[in-house]
Length: 184
Image (cartoon, rainbow, N blue to C red):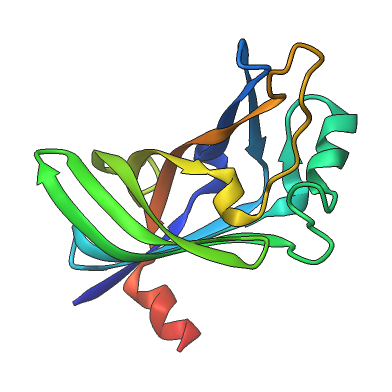
């Protein structure tokens, strides 16, 4: 039996980290995102995963920087309002560790990526909802996705590294069969 799971945004976060001037790290997050998972029963191996983040919801704690990140220099969110991921495989590596492969789309450019996933487990909350938790991490090269803005410093260094660390701590809620029947 196929099960559907939807992300619980109140108990999830999607973040990134990038080196600035090669001496420090700047962190940011997306505040608006959605995700769905389809599994065979409660076994997540071979799960089908779809994720989308609203590029305009980026926040780094600096309004001016957030505006620049949404400009054509970076995400070009006016023309590419979402960042999307669709899985191609979800494979168990060991007890709670998985490899998540899929296609990531940023600025209209789609590239394959591999992410590490730690499965936190499944638990019933106090309201009877079935929840599943995951920690996801990985690295991408921003220039692979056309996010190539950069400045050379006076000393000849670079403003931003090409490598971006991705971190997501997510919780999914199982869609109960009755809800699925009503939607059909």
